[in-house]
Image (cartoon, rainbow, N blue to C red; front, side):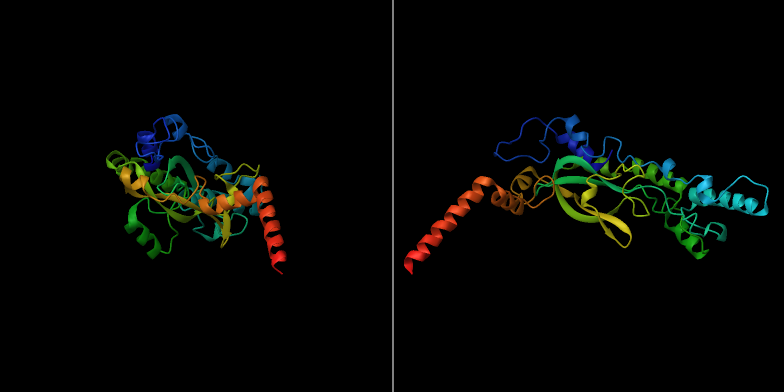
Length: 282
């Protein structure tokens, strides 16, 4: 379980104020309401690697008895070998626009329900695209020296996922940390390796896709993520400059004020009075 989710479970309690009259970081309801993200679901992104993997017809493989059909079939086998092992083309047979080999997987931010010391929600960044370090830096360097692509296929990706799941560091931090998080804002790549953030049927793979922006053909999002633990007193006395949705609190309040009907009428009356006063002085 991730750092953010464990912190949420350990610190979610009923109530909204502490003894100092200030809302605590993780007092936003019961454990279940904290652990269940509102945008992605308990199991994360609905992205499916099986659906993203191209079928034989999509890479030009057809049933036939011509030499071209045989060559295409061999290229199809090479495609699936590369997709499972490398995540990109490793030979001339698969180095073409039809196959368009890219590592499978999707990166995304998951909601935690935990509030940062500045008032924004803390997110957890999930790396679903294989990074190529499943067997360590030594093997990665050897592959580069041989002129081979990195190991970013499905098989190495499964090993990377297992390594992350077995990493005790987030659990130890959660057990011995304060549970009152200070966060930092990061901009990280989301979606798949082709820059897509939704499936062909329109199902979004990331939370709040409207906040994603494109850069160099890929999609990115800005989020607040875990930085370090604070004491309860430090957390309570930190300036709450952000709303829970990550928007600046001051600008949001000002916008809400000037767009409220009663506020607009008040401002209009004050402007009218000021005009009358100015005209009388002339």
